[in-house]
Image (tube, rainbow, N blue to C red):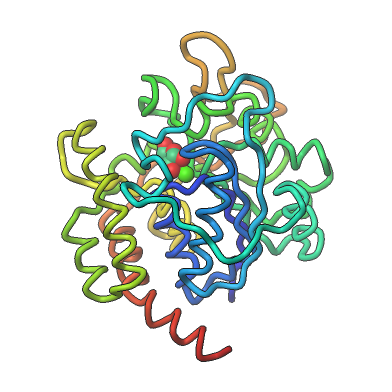
Length: 317
Ligand code: RIB
Ligand code: CA
């Protein structure tokens, strides 16, 4: 059974890893990449999403979304984590194709109405486009199969401040609106992703097995691994976004706790995801533990096949 997927993304190094995993996985059909500000400016995110689809010869839509949060001024892009152009030290990569003329939230609404209850929506950046989607089409909550969101830090510290994880911190008002809506959400947050690590040897193996796409992932991982050495003291790659997609393909590798959530939208703790005492809020399935080694192995095994899968896709015409 193939899962239809829309990835809302701010590529971004770990976003690129997640997207190439999704493109290569036999059980996933990526219908669209929709872009949002966050790791990079939204224009860079759109350019990078088009490049990733072309690298994999993957025929999905790309649509540009929000350039800034729904309410507050935008934070600066985290170029110090993902590089000036979003792919580490690599210079800007220019795609051949163009994005869909519709804004991201309209593409998401159109596809979810075309395939009612079939599409998994996987936001791995700030949730601005998803909040815009709710404003644009409030009934969409009954058309989306589920959301699998990379974001939040419910029972652990944040990674931008002690309280807030980056995707939520970048648009806390949007995140609170998304968690208040009546739709099924799985939250893949720092509670598990900060313990799910690949290393430089893993990515060198990918380059050996898949010199083109694996080589690209190895090159961009270098900048990210050096950044994480300054944060956690180890040369590791925290697999935030790839874990959200592995949660879709291999749900048995993660355990969840049902927790209704609020997001703090002001003060020092802005962007914190906290258990809510609002009885009207639908519980979110919060990922609380995971088999990190198996998640990394699953990611690496699929990504080792990326070049072959691309060639097969090209030959199939
Ligand atoms: O906190 C990690 C998240 O923020 C990931 O999605 C990463 O790509 C950044 O967007
Ligand atoms: Ca991301």
